[in-house]
Length: 324
Image (cartoon, rainbow, N blue to C red; front, side, top):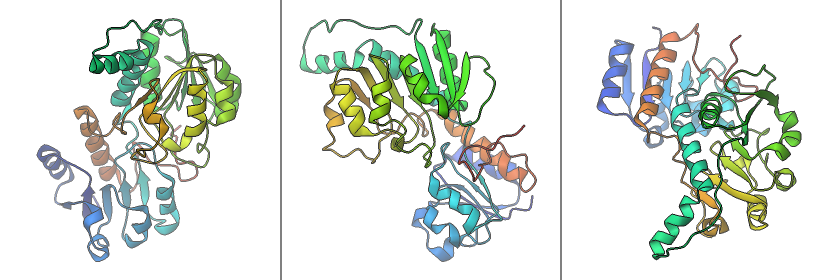
């Protein structure tokens, strides 16, 4: 192993640290938050696992690999190609599928069964039948972002009887179970009127910014549900609010927002058909996710410089590099 000095700038538990030390051998490993480090402290590292401010990437002039601890890559990190062209950029794509797909399913069923509104009534001691509920059976589910997260979510809804599960990828691919069909973003406008459920699990790139705007909300099927667990920038929140208030949508699930934390004066807080959570569908709230991130990091560090890397990022797209 040619890497000599690793900074682990992500939360770890004692057994994670011991696992990394044992797997990586005699290499020097520092467990510290990069945001609390001065430039001269940060500069000597030739590998980073976790977070470093994209505006400080130029400081890491010895960098060989940056292993991010999140799945979707923010655009600022793509500048690594210019700032440190010798470095490999990897995401933690593949670590979050179980946690986030389970969140999506739970949130969708909660909306269909009106559970958030019943919980609100419980707090007010109101015993009231809120009326019609819905079922996943025979529904058309449009999965925008058919990678690890989207694929696992597709499998869950298919198992519960969804009628047609359609995936959208950046590039064309043949449909494969659990997907019944596969398309690209070019087909989004044609697919939205067919979808009962639209899930978004996309990275924050120029291509995905403002993806769901007022025009696209107007294309949605009556009583559709929109769910976003990727980046808040993909949804025009004003347009979503208008669509909710018009009665067109059954509801929305937002685990991300354009500005985080969501400002207290945002009217989204007050909408009973919007289920809001503070970017918690992934993170380390499921122990398995934490273990997955550590395992991916160990694999990629040991694979430097020749690979293969589990989740190398394609600088041109911001997505995980395709391996044919």
